Each structure stands twice: as structure tokens, then as C-alpha cells.
Image (cartoon, rainbow, N blue to C red; front, top):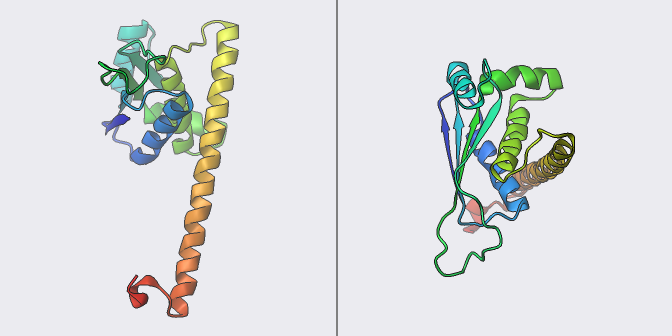
Length: 181
């Protein structure tokens, strides 16, 4: 799965973490590993322009999704003639998302993860214009996000434990540098 990210927002963010959230959501939704996705982080004025041009709504917004291809999830990845499926673009606006993160009481990166999952679901055809659609999409979004956060927490715990183990092994002279391992 190819996920390209470009940060043109002027806001420093953990780009690899945003890519990880997108990859997790795509995997969870059983999207073909041949799929391609682009994530673009933009400034407020760029997002405002996109929002007005494509949605006919004034001012900036937090996330927009621009689907490219209809995803044929029934096709097998090893079937003849299957090529990369360009899912589309997710456009995020960190400057807009900062205020939302503050109001929600979490970090900007957590808000960007939420918006990334939201954008992935839009690219896959989910919408929230009608109450039933909103219930389905937001429920799925919340499950994917909770699972992603749990996985990240588990990875961080394991990394911390490895670091602590390495310090202990080093203190007793059993670290890899001394054993040739």
C-alpha cells in the first residue's frame, strides 16, 4: 500500500504517525494492498479555497476527501490485470484542527488521526449527510480510531520495555555491543 504525505501547512506534525493511522484504517477496511493514497496538509487559506471551490461553503474546514477511483474490493489482489487503485486525496488543515483538538481536550496529533480516519472512510464511500449514514460512519470511525490508539499504546509500552531491558542488560555487561550480537 502506497501512502504519500506532503506537509505544506507550516505546522510541524508527526507525518509518519498520520500515515500509520491511514494505513491502519485502510487495513481495517480490507482495502487492497495495491491501493494508493495521498495525504496533503495545507494552510488555512488553501483549505478555505478548496472548501469554497468544491463544497461551495465559505471558510476553511478540517478535512476534505477527494476520491479518485471506485474501489473494487471484491477483486483479488493476485487477479490478472489488477493494477494499483488510486483511492484519492485526503486534505488536512492542522491550523483549523488545533482549535478542535483543544476543545476536545486532546493533542493535535490525536485530532489529525481522527480526521485521517474520517477522510479514509469518505474515500471508501461513507458519508454522514443523513442520520443513519452518520451513525454508521461515526461508529465505524470511532472503532477504528480506538483500535489504532490501543495498538499505538501497546507499541509504545513494548518500546519502553525494550529500552528498560537494554539498560539493565548494559548495566550487567550483556548488551549487544559487548557480546558481538
